[in-house]
Length: 271
DNA sequence: AAGTGGACCTGCTAGC
DNA sequence: TGCTAGCAGGTCCACT
Image (cartoon, rainbow, N blue to C red):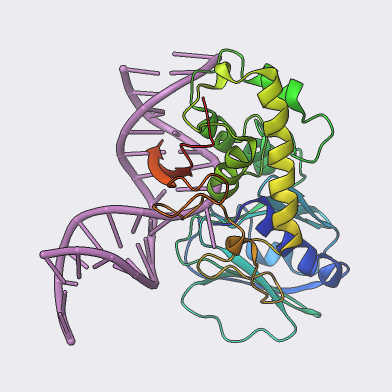
């Protein structure tokens, strides 16, 4: 579900409000992707520090370590002053004096994992191998081009993989490739430097625009204030199979790559 | 090493 | 109306 914009919008919606709050209780629902990795009671009395993001992961700093959180495909976080009774899909509550941070995740691909530090233990393991942040100045056409050397996988899958650049999931990878005019089936090592430059710029501009619009709300994404995003109304290829291309009036196609749907315009996206 | 496919889990929708 | 197959924003892991 949530790609970088949704995760970042979520982070921004509660980071300032939760900072400095002391943990009073922890409540667990059904198991998530991984076990918490510590006794829930050990979090009590710790004070929440900064909330930061790396790729699609959020790091909630605490006194003696922190929680690495991921929203998976269907997760969302809410931070409410008064926590309502948990529903069947509410699987993690961090109760503080300022309110309760609650992870709701029907499919339970999400995770909340304790780690002694961002660069140690479970967090280090999960974050190892992540590519550059898309807004890191080091992420440019040259970096992308170099990282694609020897990579025979389709450019769409290379983007989704997250080992080169993080943050673009299925929606934004499709949108960025459309923006850059590149056929998603193109082999990674066949994308020229010039086109890598266009693509790097497209990844950044697509994610930046989604961020401004509060992310995408396909099913039920909400930030921690309960606000929906608007980007889905701006999508030019994602979910538009059979509709006319906004640029060339051709027909948007849907194909499957790596068991994921890819949407593109055969007219304006070239190999 | 890189590429591929399966796995995790639930809810919704299109189609019969 | 009711059932079923297929699909969904992610990413880890085992295997070739």
